[in-house]
Image 1: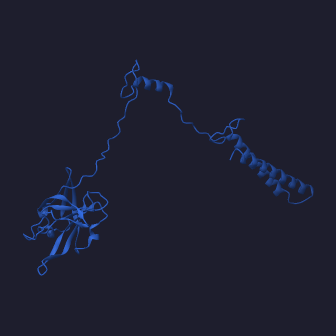
Image 2: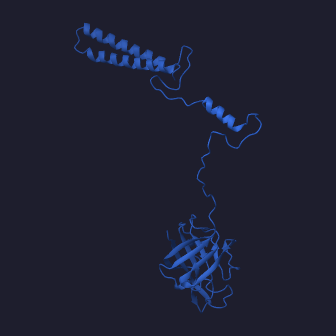
Image 3: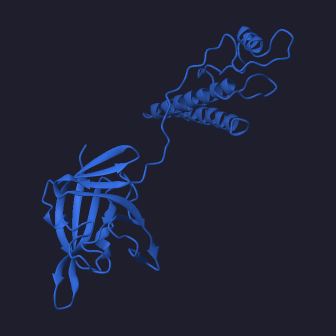
Length: 268
């Protein structure tokens, strides 16, 4: 803009100042009582034109028309384009020996400051579930999804971590750990991994082992859900876990009528 419009604006300002000044002078000579507003307008236009002219002179460096990044009276400390000469020389001497052959790992006068080491390991999947009060101590295995259904065929007496739910503490979703009330074929009634889960109460402590660490939870909610209520298993709270098993045995149908769902919240 400074290459063309600023000079035009400055010239226009001076022109308007001259026009208003002539109008004020004419009114003054004619004996008019209101020449002063035009005189003030002339001063205003002259001040604007002067400011624009100074601004243009400030951003033009010399007669060749080189433009600096900032206008006059606006100074900025330029960033150094190169390292100071002694530092560059010391750095070079630190890298190469006097024959210019070998290269050291670190420049001699420059000390490396070690940054704090951040652990970028991925969260470890849970390996074992313990509920001391209920005498539950079982390994945790993965339960896959097959055609949209969790396959618990090989779950046996283990606790299963349901796929598509949270897979570790702190995940976006809560982990869902499922266990049989009985074994898959129905023998030995109420001797499955979660046979004693029906006796859990609020505040019951639950431990989840993972990679040498233990996450501690406490039961905060106990409720029953329908067997097909899948939405209840997707809880957007990585600081909670859900324990799932069958409940309400029906002798006439030979099936469990509902599911027992227990939510436990992580203890800081």
